[in-house]
Length: 322
Image 1 (cartoon, rainbow, N blue to C red):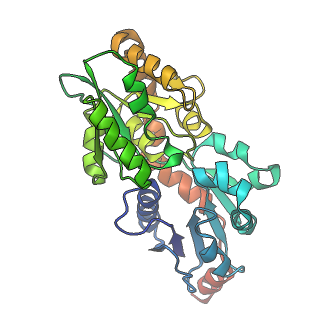
Image 2 (image 1 turned 30 degrees about the vertical axis):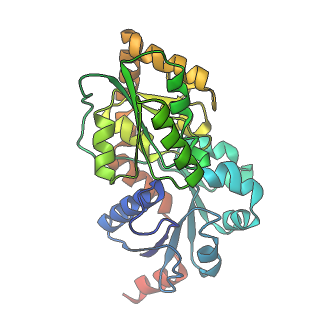
Image 3 (image 1 turned 180 degrees about the horizontal axis):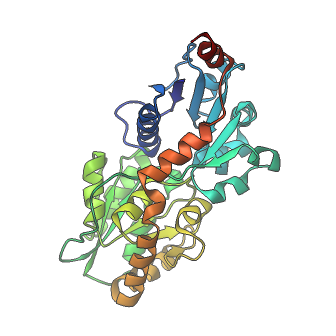
C-alpha cells in the first residue's frame, strides 16, 4: 500500500514522535509498503493514513478521504490530557478505524467502544550499545526536553536533598519552555553536581545513557517513552515516576518507582540505588529481563499486525486490475 505517515514532529527535531515516525516508516518499507512522512500533507493518493497524535494531526485526519482507512497512534498527551479537553482529539479518535497505543496500560484510559479498536505496539531500539557506566561518580542521566509534561527538574530538586558528593546528574534536552531553561541554569549554578547539556543528537544521547549508572524519568504523563525502551535495550536501570505510561513498559512489579512530583521519595530512591548494591543489581536484573520486549523485530511485527486487514477501496481496485 501507499501509506501517508503524519507526525507533528518535523525533520530535524529530536523528540520521541520523530524517532517513532522514522522507525515505523523503515519497518513498513521493509515489508514492501511505500511510505511518505509529513507534518501535514493530505497525501490524496495514499491508500491508508497512519497518524501520530490525535489533536495535533487533526487537520490532516479531517482532510483525508473517509473512504480510506485511518490508523491513529495515541501519544501521552492525547491519552492523559487532549482527549479530555479537545473536541478535535475526540473527533480524530472517532474517525480512526484502528488505534495504536504504545504500552498495554494505555487502553484503560479509553472508553470500552474505543478499546475494541486498540492494538499495542511497544517501541523498540536497535542500538548496539550496552551498559558501561563511567568510572568515578555515580551518574544519573535524565533525557527529556524541558516541558511541563516531563516534570524535567524533579531530579535536580531531589539531588539537593542528597548530601553526597559521589553522585551527579546529567540532563539532556532542549528548553521547549524558556522558563524551565532558566530554572535549569539556576540549578546548575546552585549545585555543581547537576549539569544540563541542552539538546544533543540522538546517538550522543544514547552514549550518555549507556555510560550512566541509572536513568531517571520523572514525567507526569507518557504514552510509552522511547527513552525507557532505549534504557531497557541498553540495560540501564530506570527510576521512574509511577504513571501508567511507565508502568505499562516496566511492569507493575518493577522496583524502581517513586510517586509523581515527589522529590523526597525520588531522593530516597536515588540514595538507595547508590548505596544498596543488592537493590541496584536487582534493578539491573529486572531491566535485563525486559530487553526482548523492546527488540526491533517485536515492534515491527506488532506494527504490521496493527495495520493488517485494512485495505482501502482504491488499493483493492488496483490489485484486481493487476
